[in-house]
Each structure stands twice: as structure tokens, then as C-alpha cells.
Length: 498
Image (cartoon, rainbow, N blue to C red):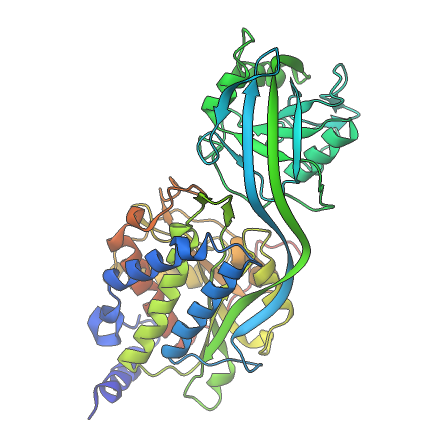
């Protein structure tokens, strides 16, 4: 009797009502195949300079997607609904080839050179341009009937400096509307500014603005309007001529609920070279492991993790994205490989997806949901893995919406990995959101205290917690096999508004 057949018999015995499969021994069901060394190796490869931060639509992302497709194929995953595992769609792309910035004295001479990646970064959808102008602080960079940062200042030909966030108090109209970087940049440009510099409010997280991001809001794209953001240190240098600093002005604005815009007494030179594409192809990596049961194989468990990150800026700066989210992709690859090596029988089919364009607005997962290659009404559950490599324990969102599914995971964790925290939330979140909105039961696997290096150049493989990522992958594997063979049929989110 071969090992796979023995395991299948054990599963039949264990999968009884009221019992949790795999409560006896991790090794019996193949979870022991998952090793931290292999997970770290996958994370290290995907977060290396070879893939340049995996920007959707870039050549490097395409190479990363093809690498993941090969790993999927080697793990026994097959294409579904099309000849290839690459599910293409279009997304807008901005390639930042070079950027420099100088703080100038009153005579227009550079006195403080700012270093890209240490003192400043570009917003992901910055425009290009060589601009020089006086720096003018314009609060939250907003112009509305009930709150106008531009009311008493002239920014024509100048460079606006503004907090990236929205005001923390509630607008008199009930909403501040669009407060994205692009929206604030459009407002500044409409007032005649030559560019915009974003700075952090005192309560921002992470506590620095050296934060790569391609989440800039909706277009249109401002081709000739640079958008950069400064570190706290560079911000202090920009405000050096004033008796008050940016945090003081933030507190004054919030206290008075009124603008405190002011000229900073210094000028700035910004030079950005970027290449914008309104549409460029990118791809989800999608494949399936077909179930063994003649009926249940037409029901599906979906495992997803986004492959993309925020790319690079210039020749020297790239954002590795080891935790966000090479860690999640490594976890689902490890789960697929463990399924193949263990030869555990699965009755339902399992779909594996490495999403593109999560960072630009969850576009890859939305595209998959809208263009599913399988009957979406037969999807039993979706498990999303995002940022699972740093921190000190496992956190899984979704309990408030799908308590039965979350309880199932907790029971498995209690007998195996023993790292699940009680921190959770409702709804979907990230790439699980589109599935949640489509009525699918979802869980969002992440960690606690795991965002120290979020979107930072320091998000590298050496910052990954080996024990944690291994246990997340093992727990994900056990839950996946349980769902693929069990009786869970999904549940209605009773908190969702109809």
C-alpha cells in the first residue's frame, strides 16, 4: 500500500462531523514537507534586483510571472480556461528612470542635495519635468468651499508642499472627496504650481515618507507635473527658515480647523524623468489542481497572493517587496508543492492565483473575479496570503464576517502551528475584497507586528522571520486540504448591508 493511499484512508477516518482533520500530526498530511529554507529561498529570488521590484506592466514583472508559472507547473498545477497560466489584462504604468532634488538658498544655489531613496522618493505616477520654484506650504493641499488651503497664498510658478493625508476631522459636507496624491496634484497645478512635494503628518504610518507607492488615485495623468515626497529629515531642512516646523503647523491646522499656509523661505529644484503608458499588458498567474471526486471537483477552493510590488526609481533604487508580497507567493507555491509531494487526495479542485496590480488598486483580483475561468458560484472559499513573513504571530482577517470558517482555522492552529492571534476584522481586504463582494467566504492570512519595512527599500529577504513564514504556509496548507475534502460550503456575511 503506497503512502498516498494510506493518507487518503486516514483522511476518510478523520473527516467526521465535529472533528478537525490533521489534529494528530502535521507530518501525516504533508505539511512537514514545507521547509523554511525553501520558503526563504523563493522570497529571496523574487525580491532580488533581478525583478526590480516587480512593477506591473514592466519587463521584470513579466519575468517574475513566468517564473511563478513554471513553479506552479512543476508543482502539478495546470492552466484553466486558456492554454497558458498567464491571464493578461491592461493596466497603466509609469516607469521612473531618474530623479534628483535640491533645496536651494535665497540666491537659488543648491545648499542641500537630497538623495533618492533616503531623503525623497517619487510618487509612483509622478510626471516628468525640470522645475525650480519657491516652496510654499499649503496645509493639506485642498481647495474646497468649506476649507481652502490656497485662499491667501500665491503658488503660481512655485512648488506646493502639502501633507499627503486628508484632514483628520470630519468635513462639514460629510466627506472630503478625493484626497489622493493625483487629486491634490491636480489642484496645485490648477492654481499655477510647477510641482508638488508631499510630507508626512505626525501620525503617519510607517513613520517615514520613504515609502514607495503606485496607489496615486485616478487619472488623468499629469505628464509635466513632478510629484515627490520627503523624509522627515528632509522636511525639517525645508522648514529650517521658519520658527515652527511641519508638526507644529499640523497641530495648529487641526486645532483651528482652518488653513495656516505660508511661504517657507526656501526654494526647491526637482528633476524627474518618467515614461508613462496609459495601457500596458500585465498578467495574473492562474492555475488549477483538479479534485478527484467526480462531482466535488466542480467546486473550488481559491488560494491567492499578489505577486506585484511598487517597482523601482532610477538605476539605484528599487523596492524589493520581500514581505509584501514575495512571502505570500512563496507560501502558496510551497502549499502546491506539498500537495504534489504528499499525494494527499483532494476532492474539490484548488485554484492558485498570483495576482498582478494589487498595489495600483486591487486590479488583478478584480479582473479575475470579473473574468473567472470557472463557475464562480461554485467557489467555496478564498484564502488570501499577503505580508506573511515578518512579525511575531499569525493574524487572519475575516472572522467577523465568516466566523465558522475562521473557527475551523483556529481549531487546526490549536493542534498544530499554535501561532494564531485573536486580531482580526470583517469583510475581505486587499485581494480578498473582490471575492468578498462577490459573495465568497474569505480569510486574509497576514501577521501581527509585521509592517516595519512596508514599501521600504529595506523590505528584503533577510528581514523575514523563517519560523513564522513556515508556520503560516503549513497552516494554510492544512486549511486548504481540509476545505478541499470537508463539508464547508461557505456562509453568508450577516453584517453585510444588502
